[in-house]
Length: 320
Ligand SMILES: CC(C)(COP(=O)(O)OP(=O)(O)OC[C@H]1O[C@@H](n2cnc3c(N)ncnc32)[C@H](O)[C@@H]1OP(=O)(O)O)[C@@H](O)C(=O)NCCC(=O)NCCS
Image 1 (cartoon, rainbow, N blue to C red):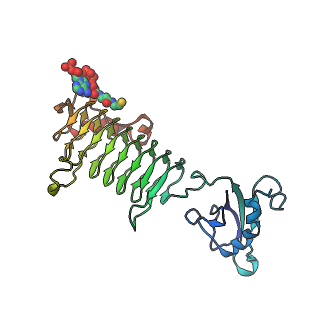
Image 2: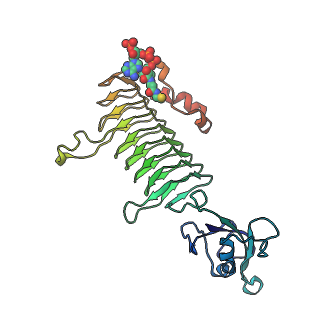
Image 3: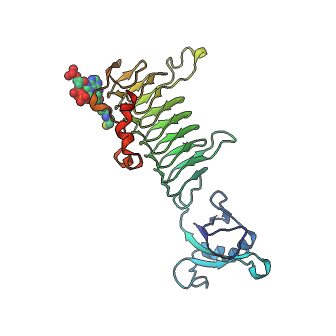
């Protein structure tokens, strides 16, 4: 149980609140400071007498705090005419359960406009002292089960499937999909318009460009001799350049660079660098020139409107 108190109107000038500010009070009189956007002593004095009754579900109409409905209205005590301040009108709503849709209680994150965060999501898991909030732009959809560590940054139109784990120091551009059960192990840089399908593993120290498609079950690696030769251990993930496609179940060995526009066939194991505009297939991957029919920019249908047609048409021609 809890109360969500919203500023809906300000008469005069208030130095503390603006319309839309919110105070979140959890059960047991605790103010949720992460979710509360502003707080002023005058307003607490106005709200306090009604806290217990409203939290226990007494009808706001019976308390004289509404004409109808289940929201209560109170006004702060600042006599603005004499103080030069402002009187703030609050709308108070009781919620049965302060779930993560209502209040992102565990979140250590800054999100843009129009974002959907489903239940059982952790945004900004603190993995050390002094880490920074997760920052995500507008229009994100973060599906249940996702865990994103602190120090992760993403642009607009960022989407995760269920049970995605994204560790610290991962940076995404805009227009990103990270599919269900995919793990990105941190210290990874990813460009714009990138689709990573389900069940992928992306270890640390990987760089992925823009317009990259990563098929289901792809495994990138960063340690050539795991648990051996530890004196020489230096994690080195693959570099996946712009416009690359990795088919389902591809494995890419540590430090391998896959050149722009290349297409890696399903099930291939890429053991060495691939020049731009290549087709790679088999185990170990054999390199061929990229067939004419595959020389198209990777772009999901629903993203086409965000990029100009000329760029789509000419991208590969410019690479020749
Ligand atoms: C590589 C790929 C694009 C080739 O498609 P295509 O150009 O239409 O080629 P074809 O199916 O005509 O096959 C041409 C040859 O390549 C072989 N081949 C096709 N895919 C292969 C693969 N993944 N690995 C090894 N050989 C492959 C075929 O056996 C055939 O060999 P042959 O000439 O000796 O008979 C396609 O097979 C592929 O792997 N696509 C990726 C699918 C995927 O992972 N999607 C992810 C989203 S679900």
